[in-house]
Image (cartoon, rainbow, N blue to C red; front, side, top):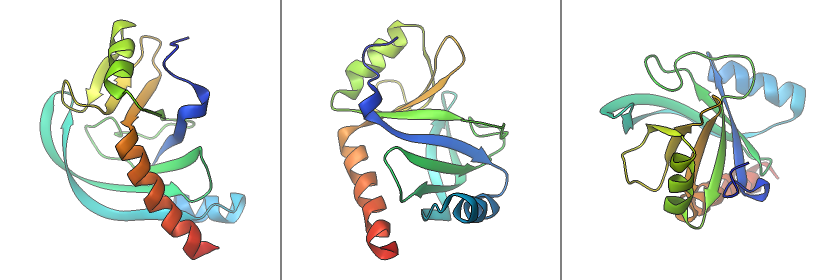
Length: 153
C-alpha cells in the first residue's frame, strides 16, 4: 500500500462511458443518482506529455463523497475507450506534490498533467489509474457539487 493514499481522501470514482447522457439517465433511474455538469467544454490539457485542446464532457454525482465521475470517451486520450468497471480513483491531498513524489517513487508514471504540477493522472505499476487533486481543487469541486445538491434537495 502507498501510505499517502488514505481511504478517507477518496474523492471520486471515475467511469468512462460512450454516451454521457444515457449513462447519467440510467444511473439516475437505477441508482437515484443526480448530476452536476455534463455539458461539453473545451479544455487545454497535457496528455501523454503533449499539450492538446480537447472537448470534454464530465459530470459528478451530487451524492457523495465519494462521488461518481462520468467522463464521455475521448479518442487518443486516457479516456479513449470505456471498459466495464472503474476507470480511475481520485484522491485529494493537502500536500499533492508530496503524494505525487511518493507515487512516482513507487513506479507510477504520469499520463495527464505537466511534470511538476500538483494534479494529474498516474498509472501505477500494477495498472491502476490514480488521479491526484490538491486541496484547492478539491474544495472548488466540492463547492460546485454542493450547489447542485441544494438545487436537487
